[in-house]
Image (cartoon, rainbow, N blue to C red; front, side):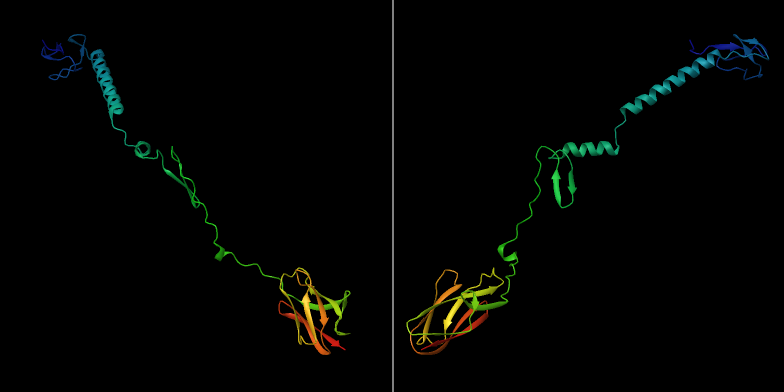
Length: 214
């Protein structure tokens, strides 16, 4: 038995498929199950078949969409993140690198300069040196054998850390010795008659005082 029924043309009395709206032999329109009509057409069967075909197409498209493999960039990125041993991509921020995930890597610390790389501080230069006695400048004095005279040195600037050196030009006339740890004070002891010079030197700058022993 055929699924699609046949109808009989009311004009030429021939049979043809029920899907047709006209007779393929004489071209007459049909109505109902084969009654001849020139003006009306029964399309219920055709509409039913069309609806069935459309439903089948929609179902087929839906199946294809849900079963097709995902190949988008988001899927590729997700796959790369899952396969990475750290669980995520590295993020670069300036010179430091931080890694997201369960095992973060600390930024590399900046190495400290070695002592050779640290520039030396410039020491202040000595501008002037002056021999004094009782806070007054002393350029010449007279002493007797066995006498002791206290001298001091005034330095500009005052915060100089240079070594202070006292010297006698003739130790047979007098001797000079620093009396404090910084060397800013000294004593001159006359030991013999004559004339000699006491000199104080600080950072390459010096001052002299004449000592006369009678």
